[in-house]
Image (cartoon, rainbow, N blue to C red; front, side, top):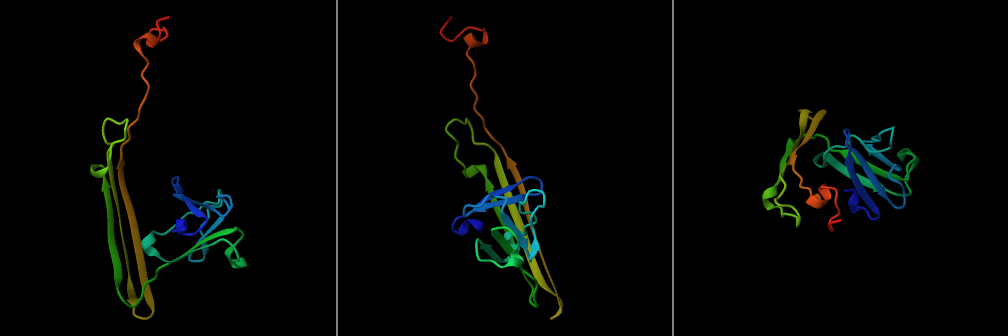
Length: 169
């Protein structure tokens, strides 16, 4: 969603904690404040974003790059999310995205198409526990991926392997 904001770009998620990095409007990538439901979601050691809900659980999303109030913190870029909540009606979603190498093209230097099986799936569900008083909402997102790769390398000629130059000297 950050890529939809002019002047902003999502640089990706990396590491075991899936730390998110956002950069834009002339600011460094460690000058972004992340919040989920009003709580700080920045890793204190490197200022990257952590603990993000899956997209199906987000009710509101905003990126502020100027003119925000003091309650939003010290960073010049603010990425704020509010998650969905339950209601008096039961509701939910179930989804899956599947991709494999059967529809991929071979690169110019690869003898075959590298293996790719990507299965991304999830659900969300919400409803009442006690009508008009207590509600629940839960979501899950999973990713299973098998990823192959191809590589190219230069193989030295027989003359080079014997210690001679390619032109016979």
